[in-house]
Image (cartoon, rainbow, N blue to C red):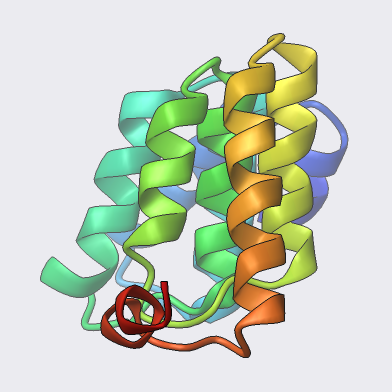
Length: 142
């Protein structure tokens, strides 16, 4: 239900529903967090989204998955925080997928940050060419 509210432009209502679920001790799951993070993205609630993302591990013992990181990149990118979105991608404990890179590149285009686009494309291309070598291995090759 929370995800549907996000998709229909009712992000603040979705966050309210999430908070009501918390107050009534409703059991949360991964999908609940994906939905509420999407609500924050659609409603421009950056700080609330950041707080909820952090609370996944600190309060609710959920390890963020790729989908949660994707929601955060979307939230940050839509809110003109493209550098922060890129920084988040660079610190993810798993490899980002095309959806996450696409969200970042779309935000860069929307907010006219072509320097970051060039950097991302260059680094992505080098990663492919070098077969995902570690930084130390890349330095030794260069």
